[in-house]
View: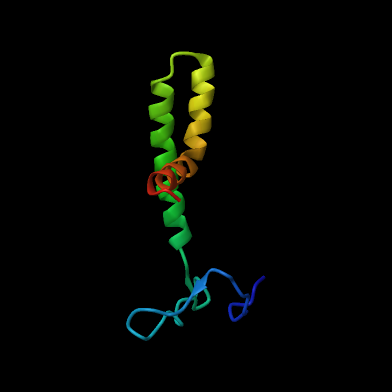
Length: 90
């Protein structure tokens, strides 16, 4: 059983924010604030992935186009960055 005063270091622990009191009195997280910002990026990418899948698969007219659409949906951020760099002449 874990000791509630244990000092396990979590790489996702943020600095204390808010009213200056922090969350020392919270027993659920050991008084540490946890960083959830990477989850926000994952949600945004997931929504984009689902949207791209719907678009590319719905416009496909053959099995090969469906497979290509799934691949494009997985790598669409790289395609956007490549197109932007090409447009900017980089």
